[in-house]
Image (cartoon, rainbow, N blue to C red; front, top):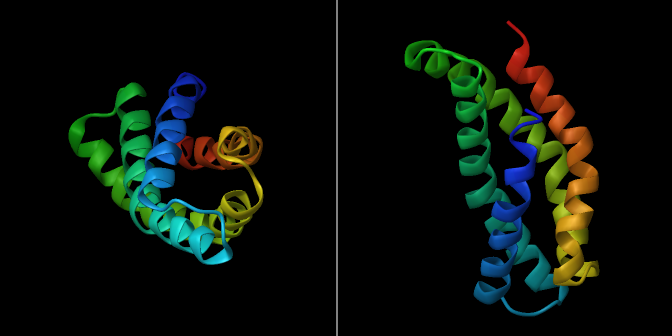
Length: 122
């Protein structure tokens, strides 16, 4: 997973800019809308792509990668929902746009450790 981390920042940072254009504002309601869009749309897609890419880079065949994704994705997505909605709600409400990526990357150290464990267990 270490080889994917440098690519995470630009993708997530770009998403935050798009999200801020889609839902301008910093009220509690705006933060809630951003979090719901982030966790309802972006997170499931990003997680699926991330786990698939890890499998591919680890040399799994397409069939094995699909099987691993079917095994790992549901649990990883549920775990995502235990952590990220609260982080993102606070991030979108309290943190200026240009610092949001830094906040997320601090939490992502723990999250990426979990994903690494998930991706490499049999």
